[in-house]
Length: 209
Image 1 (cartoon, rainbow, N blue to C red):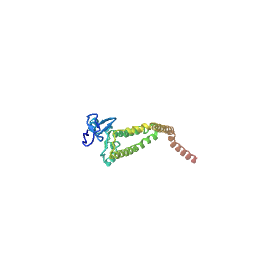
Image 2: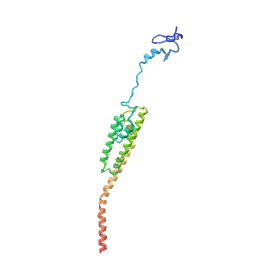
Image 3: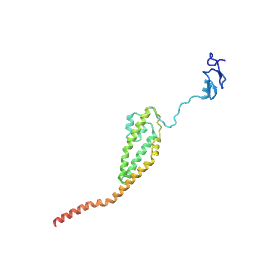
């Protein structure tokens, strides 16, 4: 018996599905069962196009670097121009929340250390967003799929939550102590001008006497 696909070759096996005779080159052994290429292809089904598991993932053709640089002055907008709307909205909300917290602590009992901390956090936040957006643009140009989420930021806070909590407690404690000391010393500071005037009057009358 000759092989169906190779008439000059001697058949040595039969397909378990269609029963056609097969030579050694045409025989496909799958877990002890023998198949021809046609039957095995039908069993495998049509090839499906790959799908991405991340919703709203972005890759090729990112925005020009100049546009990303300009939008970096509006924290969150730099992500949006790259197509990362969720990440951009989260970044923008975080930035304006930082400004709101700064207005709350200014002149409060927390004192100038906490106010200074929030004030310094604003340029740090802007620079962090800018460098992160340029890094994401570089990954997009390399063909990497960039998901539109903030899972990496959440993971960072989750990993360092104890350190961040301790830092917040220390800064707030320093602010309260400084405010209390300032409140106790404020009456003494108001007496300094009167003390200077008194010393001057005393010296003046003593010299005349």
